[in-house]
Amino acid sequence: MKLKHFLWRCLQNSLPVNEAIYKRIRKGSSLCNCCGEDTETIEHIFFFCPKAQVVWKIVPVSWERITELQSNIWRWWDAVMQSAKEEQGMDRIKLTVNILWQIWKAGNKMTFQSKNVDAKLIVDKAQ
Image 1: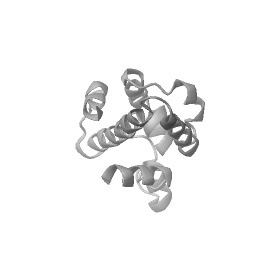
Image 2: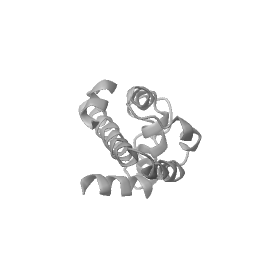
Image 3: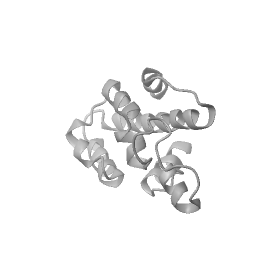
Image 4: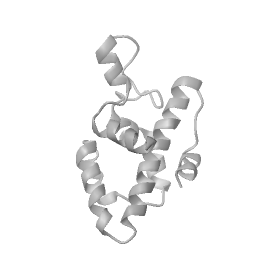
């Protein structure tokens, strides 16, 4: 249930990312806490942050066919869901949701505890 709620918040663009927090209260920074290179949006955290990109390179599921959709999490997720019809599609979807969750948790560790979580550990926890 926790992962369904998390995914729903991702798709509703309601996760407390720095961009949204900054727009609301005009305090702090809108930059990504993990890389400091770009505005922290949902798409940045999960796809464009260099740390997330390392995770996606080593995870045993490939979404290379749909990388062009990563600028919009709804379109990307719709394409992911199309794989449900394929062999082992639901397993790939479950792993993908777990990867998103572990990336989110790793980002929170960096934000609140200043602890960097290794990409391999993120993948291991998701499996």
